[in-house]
Image (cartoon, rainbow, N blue to C red):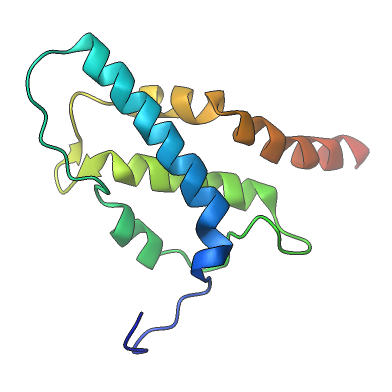
Length: 123
């Protein structure tokens, strides 16, 4: 990115809110894991999130006019899932259902999906 050899469809400010919510979600999930398991944990902080973000093909910024909030939600879910994975899959006994529960429990997810649900009802 810094060298300009590849152009991403988003900027750091575009992702700020999404990454903030993803980090809060991951932190809460890791606190849950710490409270239910013992021993030392050596964690790769970002898991596979960097690789996931390189594959994002459109801007998931929440403040863009006409943004598809389902796409933003899917991108948020993807970042959280990727953060809790390494090359071999989910880490620390995490599974897809547990991650989905934590993503769906975040208040931002509910705020994000309200406009989408309202639009669907209006159609």
